[in-house]
Length: 437
Image (cartoon, rainbow, N blue to C red; front, side, top):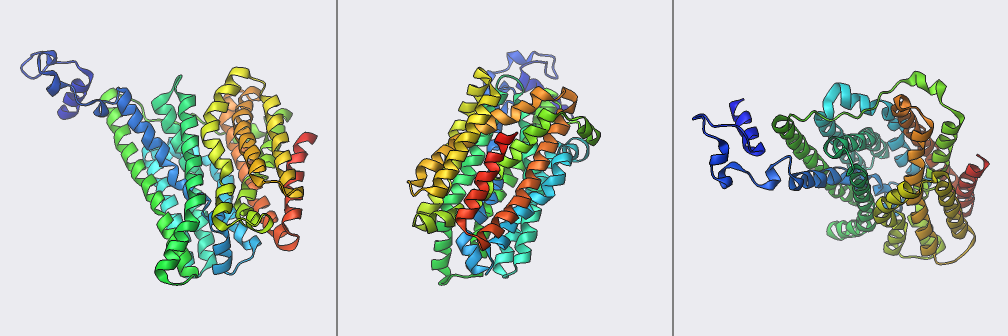
């Protein structure tokens, strides 16, 4: 205990030593540690910010592993598109419930530090089980792995945001959220462009394609989840240290979940929920199936198809913070949501009915995706009392994951029975339905 008090006095530059002499009289080099070790210093907070950003890197990198390896998974595991899309559905199913209780587990059960470690363990275990399913040629094991991975993935994002609020509450917070989102999209982009190349290298090493090659590739990709786990451990240590030195409180999500509040939700809020579901189901499932679409319709190579399929994430990485500031300055959230929806509708129509260079359509989708995310989610705060915000956002994420789970299965079924043109028409119908709101 005395050592902790001594460290705190040294960091904060006050107090006296055992002989009663002022600490100010001691040499500066002996009294003041480096800026990186001082929790109150900007350099230390930037170190914490970098750990927060990399905390979610592994989760977002591995989330779209199926999309990056769609051809290989369907060939090596001998599954059709409907079964392939179950890999996304199984990720979403646990989050239909956990979106309500992730914040509760962090606040009341684990605490932010243990919660982050536990959730990062789930994504590591889930990715390992997913990879073992490939190695042992057991698709059911791959599905189980995605379920376990999903159990940790969304809750880890809640923990990441809680750390951000705890360390950067105030004028820096919006920028921090933007940087975290950018790093998440970088993780998705790296996955799209790396996993196919990695598979080919493993194939060359083992001398043949097959489920073993697939499993080994997924296992190597899981190294990024270990990076997230290491960041979780480092953050827990630094946060506990800051709490001890600065008497800083452990972070709380601030979410108060009351399921009884759902019956009091207004019509505008329900419309926001519907817009959220209808939009995201026309983006994420499309990206999940996009690589083969670009290879079959536009005759792209596997590497080029992966590159264009990642354009939405590439664009959203730098534009999300910019659009966040832009929407804050201009307001008019509804107008920007309508613009984003219209642009996405145009991009899907271009992909469905023309042979124009798909880079144009995908760039439009990337811009509209970034704009909608910045304009739609803050609208909840405008139509819901503050005491219901936690419930409203939890319900919004829950409905979103329910929609993604169901539409992922439907999209795979449509593709197996009708083809890509009907699938694009289905996505166009989903986007168009928002105008009926």
